[in-house]
Amino acid sequence: AQSVTQLDSQVPVFEEAPVELRCNYSSSVSVYLFWYVQYPNQGLQLLLKYLSGSTLVESINGFEAEFNKSQTSFHLRKPSVHISDTAEYFCAVSEDFGNEKLTFGTGTRLTIIP
Amino acid sequence: DVKVTQSSRYLVKRTGEKVFLECVQDMDHENMFWYRQDPGLGLRLIYFSYDVKMKEKGDIPEGYSVSREKKERFSLILESASTNQTSMYLCASRGGGSWGNQPQHFGDGTRLSIL
Image (tube, rainbow over the protein chains, first blue to last red):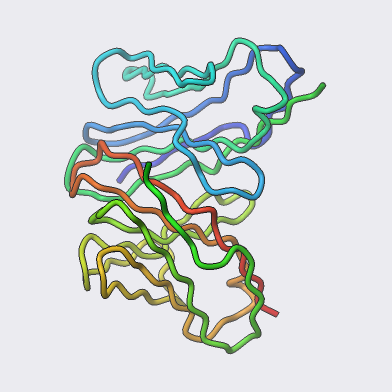
């Protein structure tokens, strides 16, 4: 069975500072990894995904995440955050085949301090 | 762009009522999911469906049932609502069959309060 751990439930960061949101997973098979973002009073939106190939994946709004197989991690980073990045971020993992489910972490609430 | 529509954003019901939450997707996706989201617990899967009339229990199915009579529509039913079912409910859909490389697409959620 797969599992996802997001170590930080809340992360406060000053505007224009860098941020890293941590995600570790466990699985006995090949996996795909996702980061979702949830803005207040909305559903989840896909931020970025790792399927295969380059271990560094990027989103259109400046976030990036690096798949590290040896450390079973998929940390999310942004070099300079903006007020509009205030949201909850969820890491999720799915198995390669045969299991339709996504397993989510418990989420990290990112608060940007002006 | 994929659109997943949940019929209500906010819903208030009374204990013991039968409650229906409706979800419709417009991308012909095989897979549909119902989650509940509670602070500190993340998203927990209630039920999912991989085809019309097919359903499988998720992690917390007790007190819930589902219906999928048409491919685009997936309904969550609270047979007899209780206060501990007060929560945010999220519906999602995904294509790709049993391959895990397709992301799930979410609706905006229904915030359900049981009084």
